[in-house]
Image 1: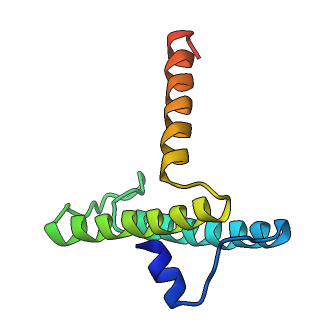
Image 2 (image 1 turned 135 degrees about the vertical axis):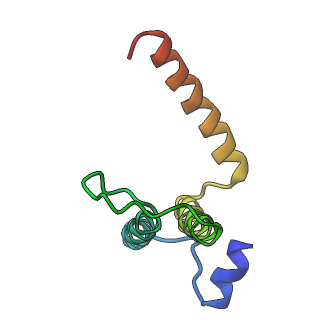
Length: 107
């Protein structure tokens, strides 16, 4: 689905040169950062504030939307670096196992 969106906005992330990969890594990382800030705005994250906003169905919906926005840009980053779902899944499992080992070792 993300490839369809990228085609629609005339963005081809295949066969990028290394400088182009760096450029798009920066662009998508900034997009993820912006979406993370939007996610925080929908939460009552400020520990010093006494005005905590309740978690309404609308707020939860907006939180979910921001999480999906973050995933869109993360998928774009994966595509920049040639990482398809199969590679992502296998790399995720390797990293997960390493994290579990680290916890077992008192990391």
